[in-house]
Image 1 (tube, one colour):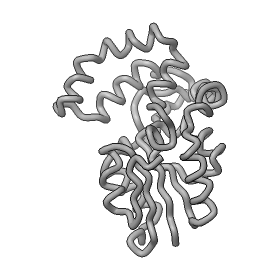
Image 2 (cartoon, one colour):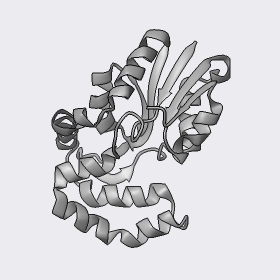
Image 3 (cartoon, one colour):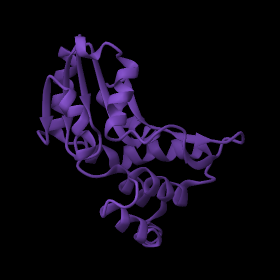
Image 4 (cartoon, one colour):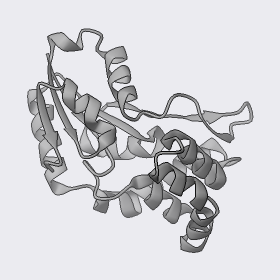
Length: 196
């Protein structure tokens, strides 16, 4: 089998969609105020003293905890329709289309949140998404926590192996753009680093 894997932020898109989505939903004033509140954690993360997943979850919780899932999903779709389409690289659209013709399966594997990747993936013709997922309480509201591990680094390999246990017996093509993709790129038969 031929399998193609695309990272999302910075590979398929031109910008980090978490940041763009927060700005879209909350507006620039709330966006900058929220990030200012977490400046110490962000600095500690940049210095390698604080885990990536933790600061991401804190920021996500700050902006979305308590929101109803149906409202969140509606905003994800609105974000894609109003701003997301313009974030998709034309070169990524072409590469995805080509891989959909050649491969048995095409995945987006991303640390971004499943709910806002889904409209992008649907538009691009991709059914398989492996990503960070959000926890929802019994009332249908976001808890502010993730329901699985942040899909970053080695976790990307783990998730792909869960879907394709005999991965080493397949031809794997990987597109990525950052250190969060490095383990997956090493696993590939054909790796494309910042190629789009």
